[in-house]
Length: 381
Image 1 (tube, rainbow, N blue to C red):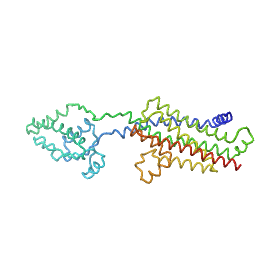
Image 2: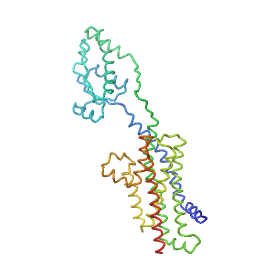
Image 3: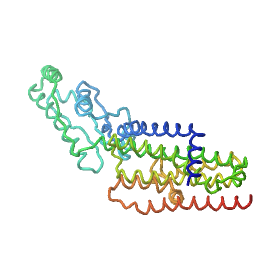
Image 4: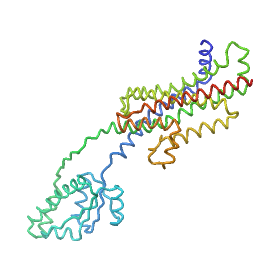
């Protein structure tokens, strides 16, 4: 045990740079939670969009559009054809199409109130709310028209006075949206995906360190010292685990201190990050013992981490991928890691025990492979 501790401490002293890199990486992940959270909130809670076909282009139609944008906070899309609007509506990029008829202003000023043509999808709530807002506006214009008695000059004066009035409209959401929870969970999901890339980058340094020692004959020299080769491997592994846990500790500590709602229990966040860190260390040990050159090691580690994160759903939901890739992703630990996070954010009661078991098996498998490779290399030398 003394020799193992001595080797671990020596590795830390000779690789202080990687410890600082782990700290900087953890700080980057902490910043990413906030930055990605704001970005997620911006895309998740957006202004509802309305497509308008203005066939009148009068002061009245412009006032209608001002009513929708300034008071109801809708976002208006204009200068599209009806077919283009229909496509946007079907794809749910807009919530409604409003057609302003020709002579909308003239007919209103003369007391002949025209009807706005409203097109929505088969969703009662959306149609009902939009229709209610437009009915409110049209009722106000109808009152002005009645009071004008068909006199256009009087209508213009009444309409001008109406525009000068700043009538506030109180809106109440049908559902309460927890913006902080949306931002926190979105930021966490994005940053945890990058965590998998960062942790592999850190473990790559461990791979270089072991490979340099192996190729320079350190293993052979150890045989004539009180330090056993197996103690060297354990000490190196503990160094890798220590560096990974520095990043995990800072990142999880930030989540705890800032009370970030990750959508899953804090203890489970620590558990899955620790399991994945152990896996990357074991994976690095096995790669360092199996391959002979740094180019091969670099290609394997970077290739596995990059492709694994993409297929595993680190940057986008796996449902967006073809079924064949979804099935392929299940052989990767990155998939089970991200599936744990996504499942619990979607359903707090989701059963993620199988995910934890699979991650544990991946971790044990890498260390078993590393032990076999080390045993073979030791016998050969």
